[in-house]
Length: 172
Image (cartoon, rainbow, N blue to C red; front, side, top):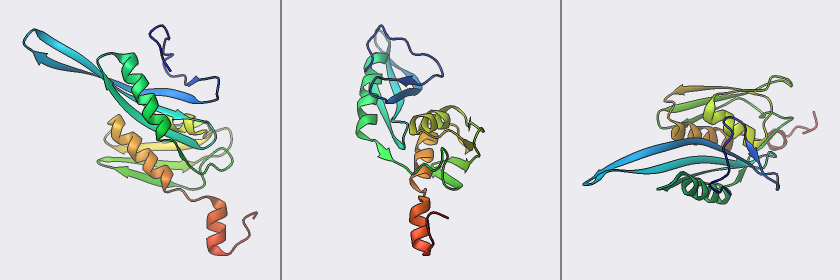
């Protein structure tokens, strides 16, 4: 968890002692105009993953950034879901859709790295994907891009499951 003295390191994911990767995707400042002036609150979008196929995303709102991040982390921990990762990438090409956001996820060969922007990159690092190609089509709203990416990941089918469905030997 975060306390006020901890500093967020830009694009690098924070790895904790228990192997959990935690990354802030977006912090939004919201102003409410009241009689005495403006009252600010913050909304945080955070991703947590174990680097071995499980990832969760959470949002938190509070009057201060650390409290919003703490709430988002709790929700992300409760939301952890497992996805099939195959040889450091995803098993097949998939398009995730949510609202006006479309996210194309394509498997990539070893050494390619994570070719992805902001929100998609954070999720892929947290889930443990090392090589992937991606493209966000449509809106770049981080909330919708995150939901589209998770929808795409949830539609992945593990190679063993597909081989079993087709009656093939999964080792080939």
